[in-house]
Length: 271
Image 1 (cartoon, one colour):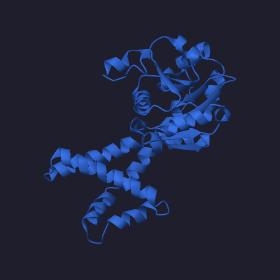
Image 2 (tube, one colour):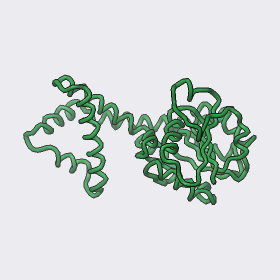
Image 3 (cartoon, one colour):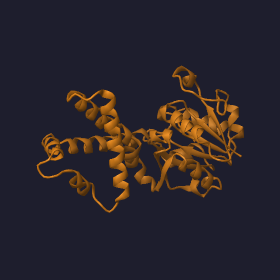
Image 4 (cartoon, one colour):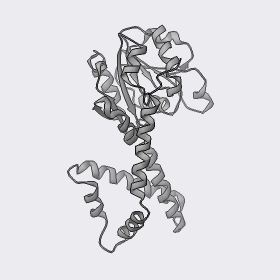
């Protein structure tokens, strides 16, 4: 039995906890360590398999520690890990922008995996991008990887790609929700009930993503042409998007997210 302790009470921590509680992997014992009662205040349902605790001494029993705190809180969290956690525990950091060099500087001689899951891990359809590093040599990494695979797709990349991957994958669901909101509002404007417009929009995006995964050899431009018949409805919509440079605006927005991820790690953790 591997004791996994999630540190944090934010949206990502909650998504990870929900995903694991919905489908508890074989051999996992799950606990939550927080510094506040945010789980209760925000109405997050946590059953008796993982009751939040405020006592850092729980870390003394940890096999795997999942650090899911905000970047401003990472210094204090690392100090807590250093004070209480066994040296042989494997640390999974889900803190945006904080590099392996910074993490190992605060916790020398420890095995650390740096990652960025997205919020869809809550429904087992997320993406978890993992940076290649010494933590992947830890004996518990294959077990941790299997736990992460329960939450969605796991991609191992060079650490230099983790900040841009955070912008594309970690923040990606938010861009999708902006598009979904536009689809809902347009549908409503044309007379569709909101519930129907939401249902149709969400299924359209899910289907589009599944099609892209099913045909990886096709570029997104080619897939677009599959949908857009000459002189048809889709072509009329795409013409408006082109005139307003929506694609370029989205590209600049995503690059800004990547730059922000890099900036978050430049100052290092503050205790």
